Length: 187
Length: 168
Image (cartoon, chains in turn orange, red):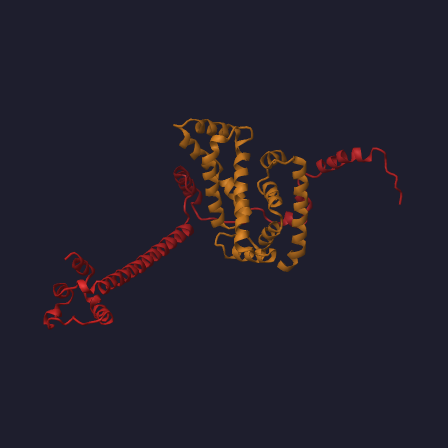
């Protein structure tokens, strides 16, 4: 997330003749952080692949509307987060799982996913995060994994830094309690 | 229980709460012993070369304004197309059958309604064997008999042939 790089990308995107070059640079610069952010929300590679492509199509369509009032990467993260949450909502609606069924389905999917490398404890952490409401899950993953500062998160999510701090604290507590309750079964 | 609270309690309460929130640790996970023991990294893997392909496919797909189809989507799309083609073929066959039947019924009804207009020459076109029939064979046949006769030969005569009779 380099301010100088963002300025260069935006300059290229502003001109029609250099738009494609600018878009390519944008994709190259942000595909990995956005992918991992999405992947931590949706867990499965195939789902993350769908969501990230949707994200970049949306970016392509709406980059003209980006006014530079926020940082480019917070704008991109916001689109990616919204796409991931929409995806999760559609999935929940489609399958109509109860929370327990959803958890079982997640565990089975992760274990069956050839691209899942985690051990039992990491699987448990994924399940713990899954118990969080979507917005809180988003706050947790942005802070815990992406290590975004609260000011950038506030810009991204249109919330105050203080409320995000409180939300994150609650999320950590919930995750810790879940691990405490279930880690003994893993040992 | 005392009902006494400081006079400015509720005025100051929001600030006090906010200070407490701001005083929260930047890294509460450090105070979560189980969470801090779990390795953050390497939870998920992905196919080799994925990001090279993603860049190519995304730029191509975004340029077309459509989502790039993943293998799963391609399979689903192919299956949908096959089903649609099968359904359309079925409908088409069904319509042809119905049209043919309808045409046959229409023609049969027409001839029944216009038996008085049928002369030997017309009937000859309908059935080659008519040549072997004695003249006047059809005279005296009632509608039911004529209907029966026509229904037995209708499948052997093509529609164009029958339509030609109308034009004689």
